[in-house]
Image 1 (spheres, protein in one colour):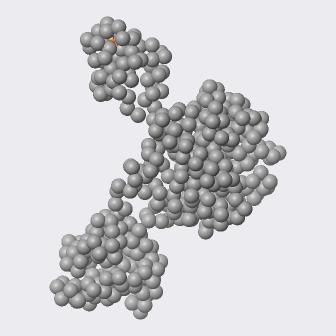
Image 2: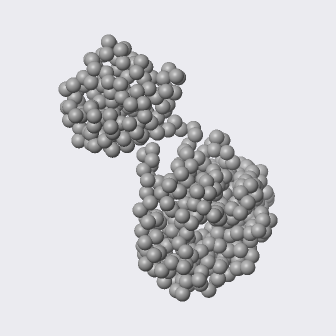
Image 3: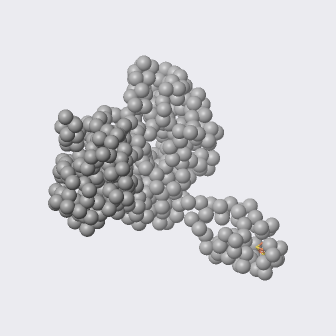
Amino acid sequence: MALTGMQIYKSLPKTNCKECGLPTCMAFAMQVAAKQRALADCPHISEEGKEALSEASAPPMRLIKIGAEGKQFELGQETVMFRHEEKFHRPSGIAVRIASSLSDQEVQARLDEINSRVFLRVGATLKIAFSAVEIEGCDDPAGRAKLAADKSDVPLILIGKTPGAMKSAVEAVKTQKPLIYKADASNIEDFAEIAASIKTPLAVGGSGIEELADLTRKAKAKGAEDLILSFDSKHMGETIRALTIARRSALKKQFRPLGYPAMVEIDSESLENESISASIFTAKYAGIVLINGMEPWEVLPIMVAIQDVYTDPQVPNTVEAKLYEIGSTDENSPVMFTTNFSLTYFSVEGEVERSRVPSYICVVDTEGLGVLNAYAGDKISAETVVKTLQEQKVSEKVKHRKLIIPGLLPIFRAEIEDTSEWKEVIIGPENAREIPAFLTGLAK
Ligand code: SF4
């Protein structure tokens, strides 16, 4: 956060010695605030003053990086309470627990599943963010951590309570920079020392906001800088309230002991409830949700919720308006058009791919609106479709003049046929999922 000239002035010697080349300390402070001079240009500022200023200019919520270079997960450094104020910056991640009771073979199978749980949605790759390995209760905590580090494609969270077991596990995989989960009042000193010595992040959990703030102070005093506030999910309303208080304290009050991102460990009797709870907490304000299951039907809704919440509300969710060639198209391939709203385009594209019928998709610029909204908002018409087909030189790609139009816009048919070279307009399906059957039927 930018400091004002007055805030900087308070930490200067106030002697007006002029050695910085300016007549007064106040003039120097104003130039530092305007980023025209560096603090180091004052040779007399004390170490305490430097420390105070660098602390004060730090972002209100710390950026935390988990994992080795190349596969790091970042969370924190958020700036607003509500996404409509600006945007949320770093999408939440799902962590899947791997129980200590599993054999090495079972752990390996579970890690393989985590690695392969990948979805494509609206042009983005969605995947599980962490393998969360319980090391407490393992005969060989270091061996279990090493196995996970060797087989996991994503960063690790090491779950344990005993300092000895945690220390051996973290040291075995220290280059992976795992998240230590978690310190509480019983082990804060030891866990903070482990985190500080290896410079790896530490999750801290308390029984209330006050205790949490007290524990982060203790961890920081031991040298652990990269902290995550950990909450449980036993009482959803209370947890959301605590998450909100922590975030508000950090962002609005600059309260440093709570100036860290948060995570929630989901405790639920069923995978259905786990999925619902995790989705809710990612919206309010969990940077990580720790869950037990990873059925595709459980994790995909959480991923979709995260993707939606972390989409920038100020940027239209669009794809480039151009001609897309899906598969090995030729001069006989079908031609269709759709809008440049990402969700619409990627739904159509996915279903065309599924049909295995190589096709052209002409994307019309509707300012990011879907088919019906674009039509209702006067962002698409038969005229704009014809103009776009011309601009994208679609007729040079195919020898036929058949155009498939969305089933939601049959009204365009007559005008396109009357005013363009596209003399055979075919009304396509209303829903994207009907495209494969439609296209294969057309190809017969
Ligand atoms: S060098 Fe430092 S102490 Fe001297 S006038 Fe400049 S800001 Fe003030």
